[in-house]
Image (cartoon, rainbow, N blue to C red; front, top):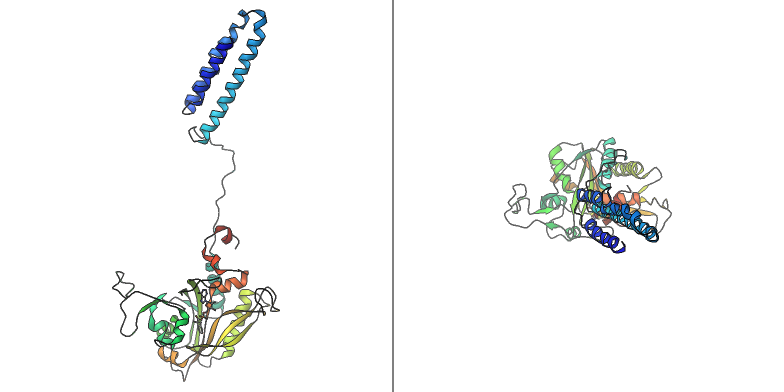
Length: 351
Ligand code: FA5
């Protein structure tokens, strides 16, 4: 009896563990542990054994059955895990929630900026992000070879016949080469050409490209450019516009200041600072002295108005260009604007 049970156990184990799928496993269950199985038939032979052997035989058969039962369970689980077992559907299980995405932080900021400026009567325009040298530099009073052009570290388009009709990379005799626009100021003269007679009141938002990368620079970034040209436009209008924007975008306690600067296309020129939101302008680890730089601005240079065929004796205007990524960083206290473009969902989900 002893050996018969051991042999039966070994043979059954091998069969169960090599079952290929759930159907085979179910059939084996009937064969090995079912009513007419060999092991059950052995139970029926116990009464015929000598009295002293019966108890031990019964215990051995029960232990073998228990062991086989456990092997069946284990095999069932491993087949399920390897998808060989038909999947059952739990109709009572709660449905899977569809994860909702949201706009990228830069897109959210663009929507908000457009909304704020539209309340001041600025309309959103879109000008090329691959543009002629003339619009990006020359028309803005930055002639070829001028050292100021180095500051923009521009990507020029290679001078060979392009296959796409959209990008003509051959230098144009009047407009020069094509560039990946290093700033949105290329939209200034284009807008003046489009509107022809002031008032001009546009906001131009676009991608810009420069050979720069560090915590506050990315090779591709966004700027928003404001341009207002009309009769009697003054620096007061410029300052009022910044104050309105700053309070609407950052909050009512934030104020701006204009710091003298130099741009070839504005005169006078300013850099615009906004009070730091962390320390309310008192000075902290992020801002050092209480102010953060937003971007550049100034009164449109008469030569730029002339390039746009607007008479500088009749009209004046202001312009500004700010980086969107830096503006976001000031609002959300981002330590490194490169985070915006690393596509790390754990970071993006926080906004
Ligand atoms: C300009 O680009 C001028 N065109 C702005 C201007 C427009 C002045 C109209 C006067 C009139 P600047 O190079 O300082 O200026 O850039 C303006 C802003 O763009 C910076 O303050 C910064 O916020 C953002 N910026 C510039 N380079 C990068 C970069 N590589 N990555 C991210 N943001 C940048």
